[in-house]
Length: 225
Image 1: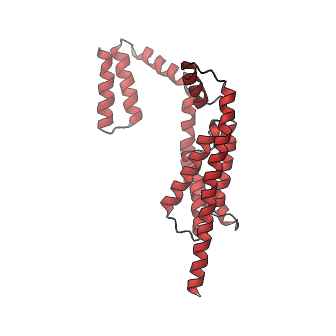
Image 2: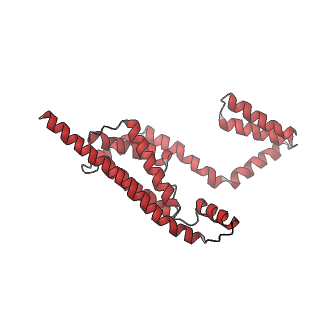
Image 3: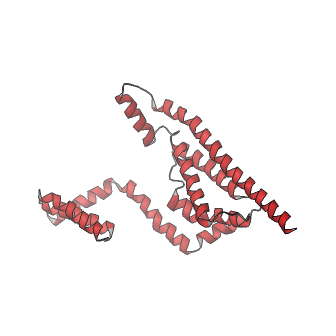
């Protein structure tokens, strides 16, 4: 029962808003000592757990690198790239990104994108630059939200086409439990029409955004004259 002290350490640490990593390590150490492990054995357990899950935790190494790139002007460079292309509007930019996100997700490369690694440092600044140049009435927060939503739609409806993704295996397991036997390849094939529909629907919304922006610009010019 002393092992349950680890839960108390975890709860107290989170309530006091201490460093989450330190709280988790302290909780794990409490559980290990309560179970009778000596410091060497506990360190061995930590090393084994890290080594067994290193492919899962390795992705977090990208976050400090993104922060360093942002500190050296990554967002400003991204904005400058878009300002160099006159024909790239907010809707077209997000439409192209959604197509890219769906295609790479459909072949299993779901990590080529995402909010911390792509939307915040690159896509959102590029979208803001396009919106400002087009004199869009959208606020910066609305542009960021639209960029994040586009990334979500591209990933969510694109990854199911890849038959080795977790969602396909989950659906197969649930269907098998009800006596409905379907191969993962069949599930991935049926995800293609859904992905196409999602692309067309959201793509239409993005293009209509550009159309409304053009109409608003024409009305402003007429009012000025």
